[in-house]
Image (cartoon, rainbow, N blue to C red; front, side, top):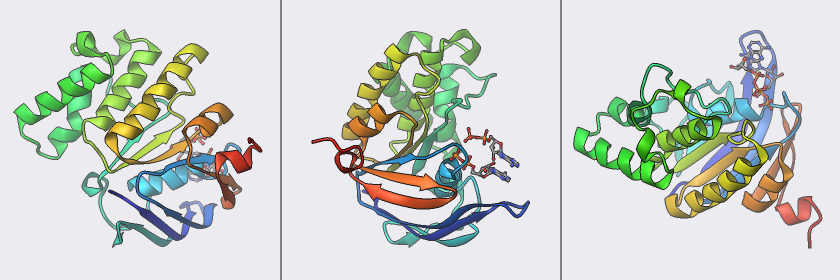
Length: 226
Ligand code: ADP
Ligand code: ADP
């Protein structure tokens, strides 16, 4: 289980630009939170601070009551899927999925079991020896998901994971992500520009603008659905 507490979170980049201003949000265990808002409003920055990929300039991030501000990314029980997938080009699909577990010194036979399980779920079993350049966009996206789910993270962050896919694959992967959320029992935070994704996946939607949270509401309320 994982509930997250973001209290007065701020980000000031080294050049002095304040990308996030006083971000407050309490996230319940297994919620599916959606971040929406115009490009540049601070969605990715907030996600990267939660993952530990970006220092927090002010405020407190707690997970299950523990302050996380200074915890290293690899010691956070969090996995992130990026918009551009960020796969390692010189590694095979198998090694891309195994990498995070190797880093955490998980025994080899356990890594093997987890990678093969994930490959089965994501229909990657026949592609394990390929390198990313020999995959389609949809397959690369699955590898990026696989790399995250092998770790069975308590918190799952996704930054526009479907925006580079064609419409048909997007629908298919959206359904897969809803299933994953149920199976993993993880707390999700998901950035998207797609209203259908926000409405069908989200338990709550956080609307950001210029580094500030403008509104937090259920999809039904926000989009005036019955
Ligand atoms: P979003 O994900 O909502 O598109 P980002 O979090 O990527 O927004 O960026 C928020 C703002 O911070 C943007 O104005 C962006 O240009 C700026 N920004 C992002 N990274 C840096 C950085 N490393 N240094 C300075 N400004 C940055
Ligand atoms: P996004 O797709 O989230 O909008 P961007 O294209 O804004 O991402 O940013 C891509 C990369 O460039 C990120 O690593 C971000 O930190 C960096 N970046 C964005 N804006 C700036 C900036 N003004 N100064 C320095 N780095 C930046």
